[in-house]
Image (cartoon, rainbow, N blue to C red; front, side, top):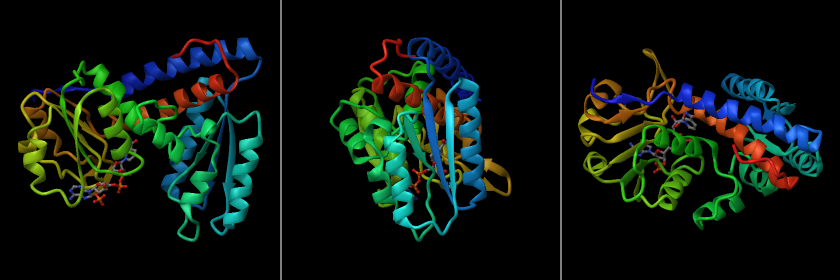
Length: 289
Ligand code: NAP
């Protein structure tokens, strides 16, 4: 294997320690700690695990959690009322609504109802628009964490050819905006892209965010490229990414593993966004972490 393995667990631990220090300083200044409200609708087991991990990470960083578990048959109106109450609650600095919502609920108005100052998931149109305009406020946690991993891998982003496979609101689109803002030349691919392999072969930075096990082949990787695998796919072989790891790692210069690459960064950046939201809301003098 030629590639350097980018260890997301190590980078995430560093970010979380920095957030914990920032929370201590914030508490000294404001006599209160940042608060994150989590909203979980229904009983999806994976979503329960994700939200549980987020609450635990908050506790470890000194951030207060306010959890709201709602039955799957909650009405759209009641869910919107909860969001409005959280918007008005001064103890709440960040609001996270765990997606996906049950089919009976309409996700877009729920996201739109979140106060953009508390949009720690970066999913509102205001957050997306500011990011697209190159003046980001709240940025989705997974792509934000990927920028940290590129930094960790000492990957030169400015002027690099970056290929992002996937154009979701959660990952692909904000990822392409962050890379554009960092002066990469960005190509965004999706399910209608022709000859995906040859597009990927031109990438100095290759980001796979598809949700298709081992789809990105080793011979799609440019020698020396940095490969970031966002995919989390449960297979009979266990958890695998969107990149065929072993052959890709023979050719890449640096690569993230699955698990242990991008995954740990998402929660770390949620904590950082929550502290950032608290500081902005209270005009804190605490230094950025
Ligand atoms: P998503 O909303 O399903 O989007 C998938 C994207 O991949 C779409 O843009 C789709 O294109 C594209 N795509 C699908 N098949 C393709 C193909 N054959 N060739 C090229 N593009 C194709 O997924 P997501 O939310 O972005 O998540 C992507 C993966 O990342 C999933 O495995 C998810 O579990 C994982 N994830 C991980 C983390 C983490 O913390 N590690 C966080 C979020 C997501 P169209 O737009 O044309 O349909």
